[in-house]
Length: 326
Length: 267
Image 1 (spheres, helix red, strand yellow):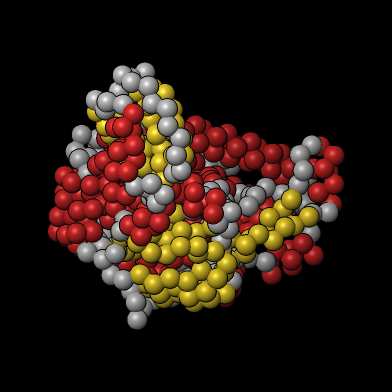
Image 2 (image 1 turned 30 degrees about the horizontal axis):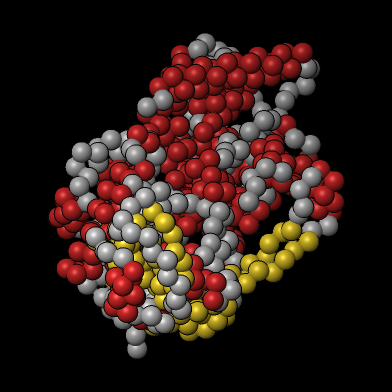
């Protein structure tokens, strides 16, 4: 059996519908309209030990709900889920010792006291032996570069500093599985880089299984070989990032620097744009390959320089969302 | 166990930061203690027949009520827990390998004990020094002192079980106001925190005897002054323990049910 085994889980939420305004507020005081929303519908997947999986999808697709079910917080309406031999929501007390969870939009650190004091409390929550705790703590402080602010009250930390402390707090009990729900939300480039490098190292050295939800495709590119795409509550794609890329990666961005005028029209040229020192093309490499295209150009103009870019992953995801109409 | 103690310790340390609040608390307790005593003494002097409690017993009751106020007053809201429920940070609480019920239980009792620890001694000392009829008398016997201490401890646990119960209920109602407010006002009266139970009309006394509330403060304080004898107290202590167990069980069962359909607020 796989390390993480999720079969056909579904979860519905009852949402109160209430149009704005006083009249409607009074009306809904007496009569409530409910709407049943499928947060996730028949989601199934398997994940092996030591994998990093990117769990992506637009807002409201059901990413967080899945994470909450996997971490034992929510109970699914139907379906089964088994992780490391535990059913998360039934054996919550025992199961949660083996997982670490970071919710990017929430905080588990005590607001008024330094992060290190929260770490001490967590030591008792998870019954971590003293020597092991100190070892893990020092390692985390060093790797996440927390030394300068681990003794500062949390309310005075920047978002990036706080998030690094949050991640450290989730790993003090050395879990086997790490769930990251938008861990890089709102972080600057440097903090993002630190977080990504850290997760990568952690996965490599300790073989921690990581499931990561994010809207930042650079996170996925840097970390996950495999992605699961979810939309409107259902799994739409489950496979390697590479395969997904090659499927949608036909578009090439070609920057040509030239002093000459280019006036060509050809099949496969999706877009032509004049820049201040040349032209910018988007071509479909399935219709016209790059060398043919460059040949065509060089017949018409002298090329001073050329730059070829692949489609960036954000655009791929936009296309993917469009294709699945989510 | 060590974990629950560490929660208590953290609460206690946090509470120690608020020295002015503790001083203000002591002053409030003195003020109320004296006002209550003066009002009751005025009644006793103007009335020809004797009240249901001897003056010494009544005054002791009132002083103990003030000294241990934080241990007997059920109208307590732990904002940290309520906020956690409202903004969804409860998600992190559910990730801890501990029973939520007992985590909250120790949080609440930690807070209450910290409150009491900072206040009860000055109130007791001054109340002992005050002259008759305003002063606190010594316990009626050594045995009743022991009974007082035991029933006060169980009473504090009972109070925490009641408070924890309505914190648990908030998980499904999402709002701590409304019904709990009415409920707690009634509970406060029926516990004897406003008027000692012996002053109640007989039918109300019967109701109060059945409900758990009077076992929080009425029982230990009357044991102290000898208004309830030690032998009667033993039987009532049994009721106290039974209520504590029942309320903890109810709290756990309800929590388990609620957690099955819990919704984490705010995505």
